Image 1 (spheres, rainbow, N blue to C red):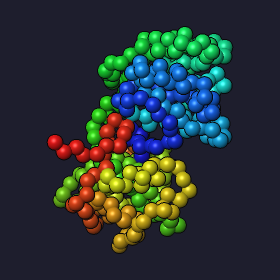
Image 2: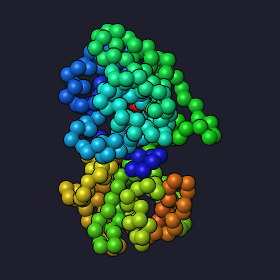
Image 3: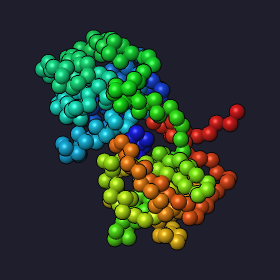
Length: 313
């Protein structure tokens, strides 16, 4: 899913309550699991949710890109606690957008660094101090990333605006088309909306940075598949960068050939009606040619960066 409505499911370990302020641990996975267990416990007890992405095995450039994407797509602006050997990776991931992506950065060990290197408040602390380390980290976070409401004003950082937009609960869709060679193309999106009943128009938004932008812009037809609660794994498949997202997903084709996901809550086959440039996104407006829906299932929902389900009082 594209910013500011992106959905991503990186491989994460997590601890703490889902709605607590986020702290991202960055470092070799083996070290994180072995050396920082006490610190994780201290952070959780202090009201923080701790997550650790698995970046092991990735080439340096891909690991940096994956970290930046994770920080961009998280449900709220996190703080970062990184091992000294991962400091440069964090600097690169935050380059040019530090305050937008991270509320604060803590470096465990290594030489002192300038705040400007990260673009966010920084604490460098020796890692082998036991409770003293945990006390320093928690105290710094209480000052640099306090638990309080965030406010966005025109011209301030996009991360706060993104978090505010995340308070609007949406459904989850997979948008599909075919490329110039007839191969299926699809991605997860929740930037979907009805536009008009007469004529029947719907829309979705796609970031200009999307690798699939040119394929959708060149397509004469596309489909929007609304997912039900049992299709969360499908959402994850189409949110990740894989060679063939359709490999293990059942789908069919109707009149235009745009892929229709089998068993979706609702599917809309559309002719591209208009493409409108709007800031860092393109808005694709489609004229509905055919629709199908299943009235007995519940929708897959997305709210504040997490999947949700309907709650009946």
